Length: 165
Image 1: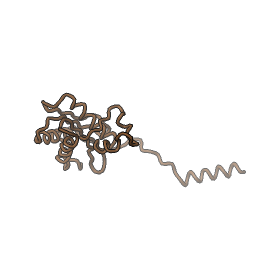
Image 2: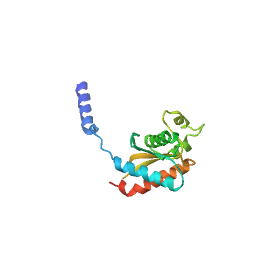
Image 3: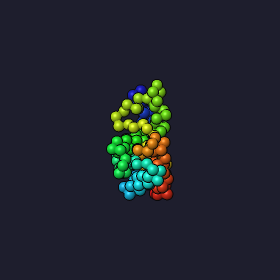
Image 4: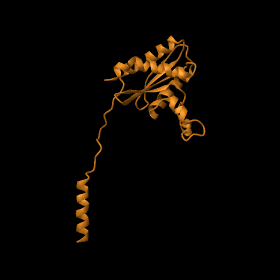
C-alpha cells in the first residue's frame, strides 16, 4: 500500500511540474560575409585616416574568422594580434580593454591571460545586434590599444544601421 501511495505521489508531482525539454535546434543571428567585410573596411579606413597602418579581423559569435584585412605597411604580427583580440572579445563576450582591467596580476581572473589564444590588449570589441552577440572585431597596429579600439568602434558605428536586421 505504501509503495502505491509513493508511486501515485511521484506521478502527481511529475504532472504538476512537467519537464522542460530543450529545443533540438538553436536559432541565432550572424553577420553576413558582406557585413563583416564592411566592418573590417570601415575600421581600416578609420585607422588610415588617423595615419595608422593596421590589421583588422572580424570573427563570428563563436570566434570563427570571417575577414582579415592587413594594410600594406602593417607589421606581420598585426594579423595574429588582431585575430586574437577579436577571438578573445567574442569568446569572453566582452571587450579586451575590460578583460585587461579585470585580469591584472594578483586579481582573481589573472589566469585568463595564460589561456591559449587569448590576446588581452585593447582593440577587441564585441558586435551586437538586437541585444545578441553577432561577432567581434579586433584591430592591431595603431600606437596603443586605445587607438586600436577607437578604430574598431568607428567600424562598428559605420555599420550600426545595418546591424538591426
